[in-house]
Length: 142
Length: 142
DNA sequence: ATGCAAATGCAAATCGTTTGCAAAAAGAAA
DNA sequence: TTTCTTTTTGCAAACGATTTGCATTTGCAT
Image (cartoon, rainbow over all chains, first blue to last red; front, side, top):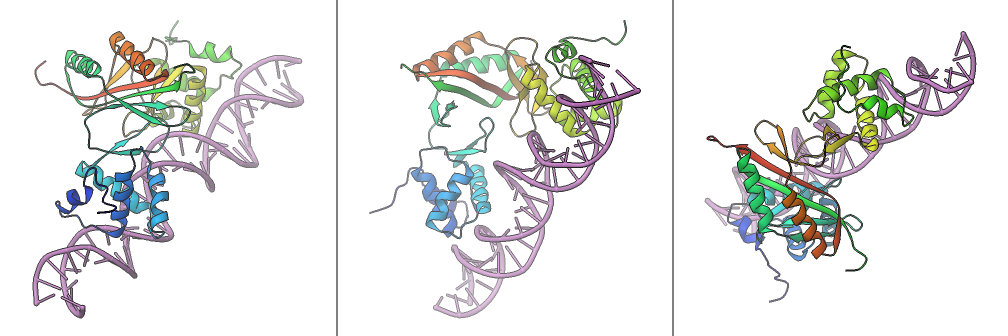
């Protein structure tokens, strides 16, 4: 019992689908499971290099794609920046991006979800996925 | 009275802000004013070349940026594709993208706008801009 | 017409991301 | 634990969308 931080147990998930647990992957998975943040590939790479300076950026990208395909993480392409990733444990939420800091706040509104469905339906469509991002700035008072 | 199709009169808008009306710009503006679509830079370029094969793609990009800065058009970066543009005449709306055809349907929901504002406010933020995109597929019945 | 700033075309650069390939490592079998 | 086959890696080069440097051309006020 020591460093077994395991929110979503990525390693098991991968092992169970016949994916090899390699050193680079172990490291990337550790980073992912520790971070509640929404890091981009480069940020993950920088952290990974600290733990093993032989890791390459392409492996980070390849691992992110792998995890995305397995449904373990989600990729978000926020406006004007690289893709950012987050564990796909919890349930659906949307994002409020602080345009000054780049910070991300998650939120969820059942009302909005409902309205989206209604709109799509009224236009003769079924929603496959959607993207709702608020870009804002912190108010000075509160 | 012949080909003076002029929904938003881009030429005047530019002229009035000290921008030169050049041949490439005339052509691009004509394309923009005729299209109710949401073309990307390459689509605009292809159409432009038909009218004047000396036009370059960089000029298309430069003109799009110019028009965007002037507030004449809006740029949308839909998921997994190049930026697409639309005249900025009407008032704000969101988009439903047909994932099979790439087609874009515009919609607006005052209720959703309100809810977004409420959410941002409750998180201590002011919305600067936002992005709401529904990606869907046409229903077989209606 | 004339002059000069602004705009163009071209090619090269950029950014984020993907890919080809030969070398290295995982893990099943022996 | 050695061997074998397959996957994964690191690297560098390729990628697609977009931007940029620069020498040349153009708009347009004079």
